[in-house]
Image (tube, rainbow, N blue to C red; front, side):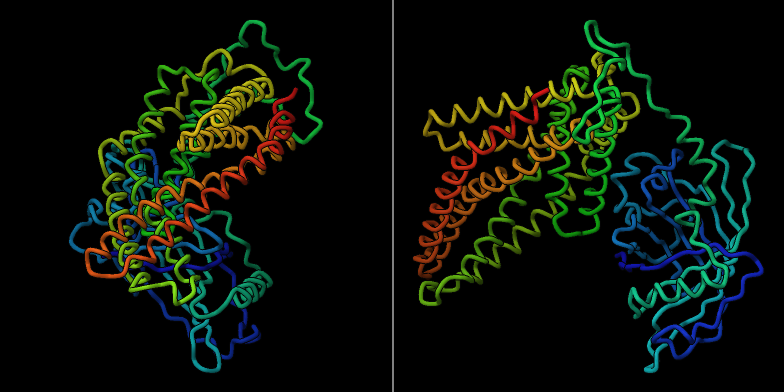
Length: 529
């Protein structure tokens, strides 16, 4: 099993003549240990098209030093980078399946082969406080990196350089900043490359980036304006790009969001399943809303694939959220109204649902259908099936998209006014989501009025989302209450919880009908030319 390590560090480029300054003047540092030398050798693995490197992920097998073995470094977030360590084992030519599992959503069925090797002569200096705690380590690295050729028999490219890595151990960000200031004062410069591997593979990465330029947009559709005469948005928007270009940028962002959420699921991060579902919903909504710009014959099957993934992940996530809400609700009740082991039973159910949801999510995300979906999304980005409308002014298409989704929302709201069907407001919620996701995509084009619409729609979704949550919580109250009764426990509290959730649903409905008249003018302002 992989062991996780969180790496908080700063990297610096230094000349061969660089001398590490006396760091005993750094606040909190009382001892600077003599440097200890290590010789590290690492083989780096990736697909032929460097998917891992382009996703800011590093996969290597290192020998030497205190952390020999397989390492998977994940993208940095909030200044820290998560690293998964696994034993070296016998495999050396290709990464073991267990090592690849966290990044399966990136490599998928494509083989990961060695793309580079690095040899590092490292001198590690520890900074300690008065109690002997190691606050930080400074690694002074002399590196020789070899980029292997992508072509059989091609020449390898060798690069050599020197760099510093300052990594926190038990120190804090203030210490890291102080050490950084000291080494920069001695001539170090913030590293030009985010990692050693990125430096070694810079030419190959540049070639790949240059091999997939943005596709030229088709000629404008008959009757559509070109760039001449297009008005400049006075509200902060940027209508100057073709609609196809805007759409491609939106799709890239959402596919990247799905990939990030995929990594979260495979590495056991909180809220990961929810983020996968959100990314799938956003992609479905964008593909539906931008139908004038995309060939439906090619994108509708993708929408169905996305829907299938979202549906497969829905049950466990919904129950997890609902049980968390019920536990909080029970904790807020007077003691005399909680009869029996209600909190314990809810907690047991929550743990069971969470484990089931995580297991199912990993199974779904490792299945052939999902991996094919990821391949299909990559193909969509590489060669989107743009229509003639893709060359039209982005503001024109954006207003058309928003207008159509807004019309659908108004239609579902009016239908909900005329029926007692409890599912009608759920349809309103789904229509509001589509408007919101479409609006978020075109804020850079249409500016402030659409940003205000996004904010207003978030409030609507919160209200209707709370109402929809009660559908799940009430079903759980009934089911768990029956289980408790069957076990000889007093089930009265579950009935009370059910009643409280019914009241929450009624309040949410009232809140929606109160905010709808406020939303209407915001909706009109956003779609008005």
